[in-house]
Length: 334
Image (cartoon, rainbow, N blue to C red; front, top):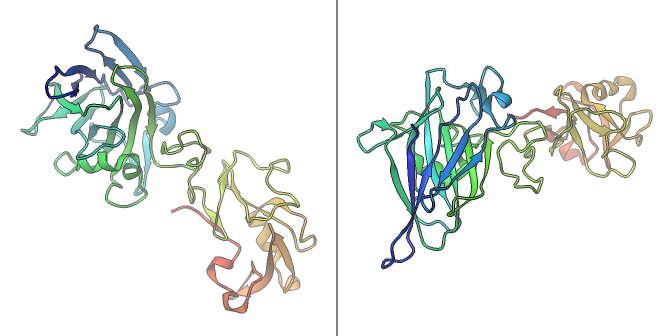
């Protein structure tokens, strides 16, 4: 059986408290399906399923049969030791103090167990409370590479997804997380997402977008050219928008084959901007084309010799003649 988290909402010190029974059901077998959560409301005994485990949210559908999750230190294979450890906890708007948090163990048969004060894992109930005036809260599950003796669940919950999905830093040990967002105290609503390190795929993998489009393929995820972040496009051809005679900014794309493109002209037609593969552009700088230029957006590129190699560089002052940032090259993400 999964554990039961009792969420107690303190209305006032003199009135009876309202009790909500939280039943977070089995973290569905990571090898077979997604994750589901159930809210069992104490008032009326109503049970409302909140599903996070459709085909698009299951770890298997995202990470494949190998279940290798991308992390800052490279791919991490889930359940290679038979079980995983992590944290569970609650967050809400204007939260003060330490968020409620618990160390948990995930097992491959789809259950999770909570660690008690003695260090034992069991399905015994645990209790927490939220202050008066809180109508909605978020529930987080973090899966970490750390052991239950070293994991700092308070830090995970304080930092939320930003700390868990960080490319580096103290929380880089986090593998991935589930976020159940905007759960009402009545036991209704809530949107569940599986969140992990941002990939270059046109999706909001780390769950920081919230519908605005800003967080999809965060800067640097798809690499960069001349200091400008590339964007993901499944396929690139002559009809791909964003590159024409009106283009001013330097633009870079990365497709599903990890081929980088830049909106650039040619030595023969400097202003004929098209999406061109970066490896196809560099050979245009030859001894015969020394001193000739082409355009990348509204920037002029000069064929020159830098570090003994022919390359296109931004045509700027002599002080930055062959600066690393001025050389036309694709920089893949770390």
